[in-house]
Length: 251
Ligand SMILES: C[S@@+](CC[C@H](N)C(=O)[O-])C[C@H]1O[C@@H](n2cnc3c(N)ncnc32)[C@H](O)[C@@H]1O
Image (cartoon, rainbow, N blue to C red; front, side, top):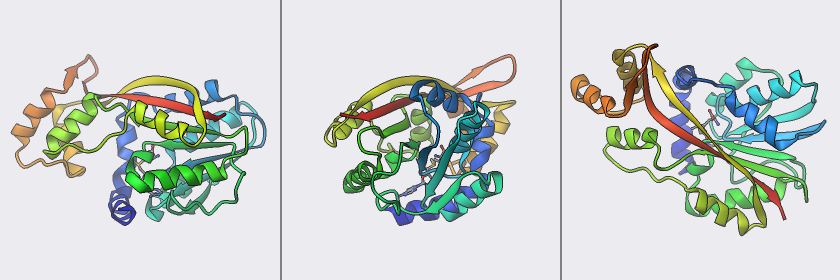
């Protein structure tokens, strides 16, 4: 399973950042963590499934701006995704590894984040990932933050519609139950609504086509996209996504 994702994200790495270019506000996420987590000086923050690093780079910059120093680690199974991170920042230490076997000592991480990544670990891999996270987390004070798109978001519905199949998603309830089983309780939850923005429907079609989302016939696909879009003064808003942030703390 992990091997397949490695290949998929290796291939995808060159265009991955163009996704963020279409989001309304990239830095919203780091502000939420900054405002809710009370991160102190010299904490160790580890972002798992960090990809090209946009989230951890934004958080590091925000903390730096607020004169909070820290140590930052970005872990990903795809070294090609990490290569893009390294080209953007020298402040993040990168490690190419599988989230279920973290090459980190126990009891060393103050905050471990998973942005749009933990759902890729399925079944026993999910449990192994949680066990690893719990092992590396600082005893008593460490926190975990999981960010995922809520199952009913139009973004997920559009993706399934274009793919012609339903992809598994994880729910808030599932996460809370799983984390409770390793003695972690909800610290805070919050939802941020975002969407993809394009100047024209043709730009949107090009975007989905590049991502291999079944564009056999542009007209048919345009009809599907129209079901998930709203025309605004600036262009079109498509595939609204509710991004849920759930932070967990130890008992
Ligand atoms: C959807 S991307 C999210 C990237 C980044 N967190 C972001 O928000 O832009 C998922 C990332 O998880 C990584 N990934 C998938 N399976 C993994 C695994 N088993 N261990 C570590 N990383 C993994 C992928 O290579 C990819 O970079």
